[in-house]
Length: 143
Image (cartoon, rainbow, N blue to C red; front, side, top):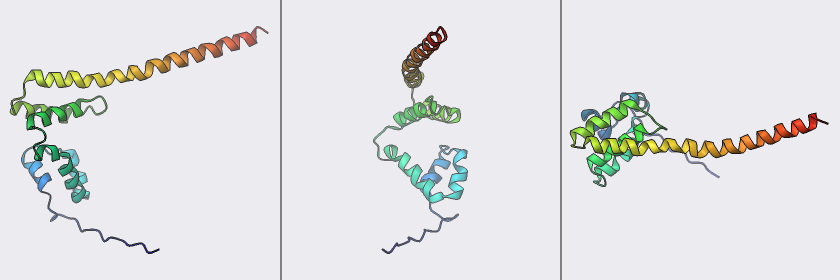
């Protein structure tokens, strides 16, 4: 069996990154992505192109895209304040209302309830098992 190796495409300062460049120009670039872009501009460009596909193709309006980004960044699993701020600012500039943004924040807060949905039944099970073990220990101690 012969294994063929694919030669890597050289990357460097001359690699074309039109999506990243456009994001920088529009103020949509996150400086936390700089290191990744420096180390692998091709991958970063592909990732950013994929992430912005619904907007570029017109699947989502710019307003909806910003609301979706607010939801993602504000979610309890992410909680990325600079992103929430950046996307709120962009949404307001696009004419999104306070009520629409607030509704997204209220909707995404529901994700946190799943901690209780998961934890409360487990607590009940473990509490019952603990009480059962404690009762068994007491029964053995009375012998």
